[in-house]
Length: 98
Image (cartoon, rainbow, N blue to C red; front, side, top):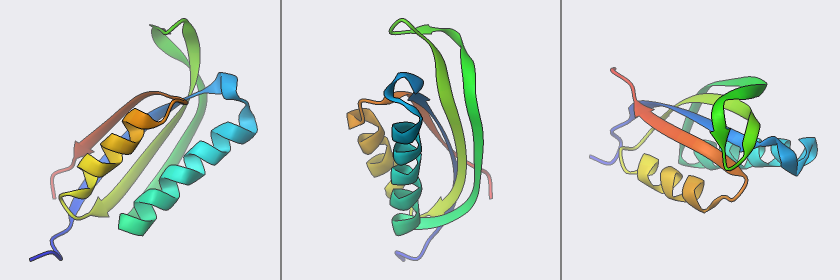
C-alpha cells in the first residue's frame, strides 16, 4: 500500500537579503527534495514580492508555489526541512482534493 500518492501544493517565501544566487540555490534545493520523494507537477516562481506585513523586520520575500504528488508521509518531512532552513521566512503545505 506504499504506492498511494496524494496531490499537494506548497508555498514558501525565501528571504531576499541572502542574495539572488542563494535564493536560487534554496529553490533548487526544495525542487530536488520534492523530486526525489515524489513527482513535481508544476513550479510557479512568483519572484520577489512585498510581504503583507513585516516578518522579523523583513518587508520582501521571494515566493515560490510548487504542486507535487507524493506518498502521504512526505509532507511531514518536507515541513521539518522547511523549519530548519534559516533562509525561509514562511512556508505552507496543503493537501489538494483529488
